[in-house]
Length: 97
Image (tube, rainbow, N blue to C red; front, top):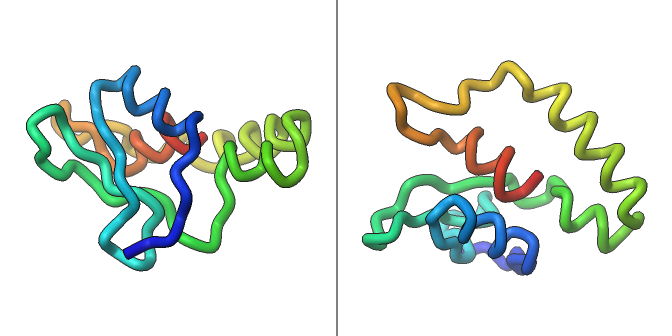
C-alpha cells in the first residue's frame, strides 16, 4: 500500500470528475481511482515523482505552476481516452496536475 498522502486538491478534483480516490494498493503508485459504484478505474502517479499539490507544498505556487506547465508540455500527446474510457493519463492530468 502506498504511503502517499492524498491532498485536498486531489480530493476536490476527483469529486469534480465523479470519482473517489484512495491510497494505492500498488506500492509503486500514489492513488487508486474508483467510480461511483466502487469499481477501480486506474492506479495513478508514480511514488517518488512529485505532482502539482506536492510542489505547492515544497516550492510554492509559482514554482508549482511552472512544474505543471512543463508536465503538461511533456504529456500533451498522451492518450486521455481509450474508446471513450478515461485512461490513467487522464486521471494523472486531471487529479494530480
